[in-house]
Length: 287
Image 1 (cartoon, rainbow, N blue to C red):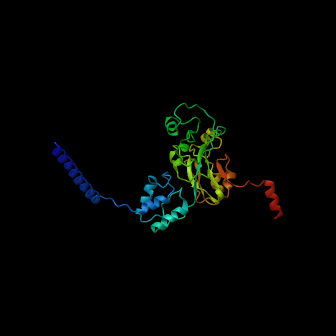
Image 2: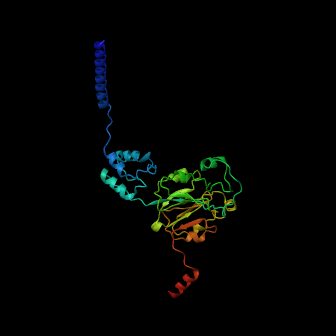
């Protein structure tokens, strides 16, 4: 009886040793080499896994950076230019210095500007709401107000204003990852250049209806009158599908279009107060 137990034990030990040897050689044969620089690059990244780089998480972006022949057009918005320079030095590449970007909400359809015409009773989700009907107002393009963008932001950089029922971007927290842009089913959130001193000018409307229809739905809608296009000295404004758009790469922030817009659809952010007409006239007279 004892000999049988000893034999069984030895057999199991022998099988274990054989299996270990087989696993060892199998691991050697099928071992996948991973560049150690991937870990180094990943450690430099923001670690947000937000997808703003266009890759599945920071690990995926780190692998892509290490394997790429050129990384000039690759960028991690949360990391910023300084971090991308460090990564480029580590990998022996160069990167372009990109202008800081920020999310902007291209809708000013507050209850005062865009009256409700119906009441929605359903799931508090913009995508679901968008798929069911045009919305609670006559504008079928504006913000639905259910906060999908807020849920998508991993940096607490956006919140819903209870009075305007519109999302608000917190400039100090926004890292331009683009998650809110992807989350909005109506594409009212856009990434734009942050601008010098955080000054920006853009058309806060995405309504593509014709002027009269758009104006009836929202008092501050773009009516595609073309006045902004005519007054812009930098050819930065175009009209397409009944909607004006300001190219932030061409805009010089002169603000002439803001004054010309008859519906106040063009927004200016973080500019100093305008001088009164009387002050301007007196200044001209003195000169």
